[in-house]
Image 1 (cartoon, rainbow, N blue to C red):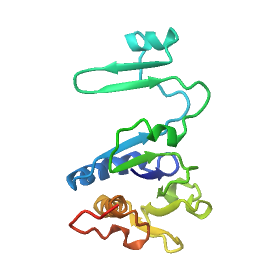
Image 2 (cartoon, rainbow, N blue to C red):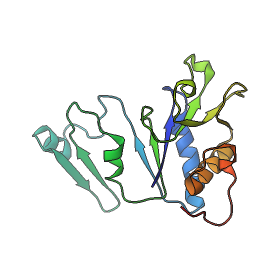
Image 3 (cartoon, helix red, strand yellow):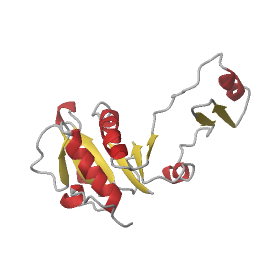
Image 4 (tube, helix red, strand yellow):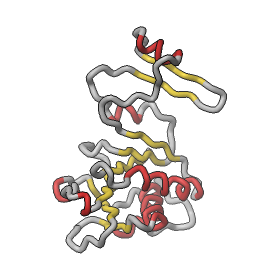
Length: 180
């Protein structure tokens, strides 16, 4: 599986970009999974629900099952989950988009908005291979993508998913599937 991290400061639009790119990747025939890194304190379970009661009572894992989906809640304690361990829990797919995990060694696409007043990540991170921004980045030495054009970003991600290419030509997509 190819893995592409989508990173950037809070409020930069990472989730919005992923939601805009996913339909184009699916339409191109790719099977894509996502992993979302959340900050401490996140909980998708609610007090009073049976699964919440199971976890509160001490279950290490709770598997919630419905006809249309299932979710595994795993208690990891104070130790943060490692991306490689999480990837092994996923079914094989063509591409995993990992939101967050900016310290990883996997290729990263940075979502950068200078108006947030935060420094870019790419100058300090060799893992950042492309930057999607809402302004032109003439000083960026990575592939620059227009954040306001999700179709262009989708083409680049599709090229990365099919070939693993990371340079400016990564978005050049051929009609036939590229070999792994």
